[in-house]
Amino acid sequence: MDSKNRSLLSSFGCAIQGIYQAFQQEANLRIHFAAAALALAAGFVFKLAAGEWAILLLTITLVIFAELINTALEANVNLATKKQRPEAKLAKDAAAGAVLLTALNAVLIGLLIFGAKILEFYR
Ligand SMILES: Nc1ncnc2c1ncn2[C@@H]1O[C@H](COP(=O)(O)OP(=O)(O)OP(=O)(O)O)[C@@H](O)[C@H]1O
Image (cartoon, rainbow, N blue to C red):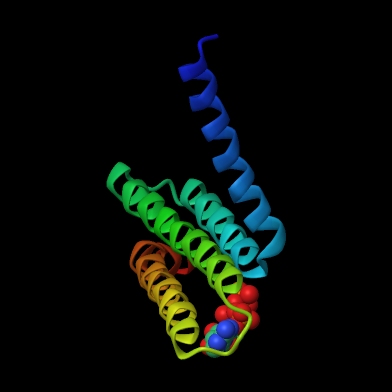
């Protein structure tokens, strides 16, 4: 294997390791993965259409993406300073706000996709 392919493979390995480490350390990320698993299972139960699957997968990816960026940013801030700094607070709170927005969006998308189907199921 040439060095370019090896470094591509090792970058991929680092990325997977990053997701795994964040999963181990961040309770919120575990909650997002659990919610994603539930939503995917519900998708199979309710036999979603292709367009609905696309929106659901995009929504799940967006939440997990935001939580991973939030984790990376938190680690970076903690590395940069151990002191209480307004800039550190802004960085952490803005990143947490980004996660909150994606999570609220996910709840709305979940209601739009599954709300009517669940009501129909119980009718
Ligand atoms: N160095 C700092 N300077 C000023 N405020 C900080 C600093 N570190 C953290 N904070 C504030 O304290 C809050 C909690 O910080 P913490 O590092 O525990 O992260 P968190 O947002 O609780 O994330 P998690 O629970 O996922 O680790 C932050 O949202 C921020 O408002």
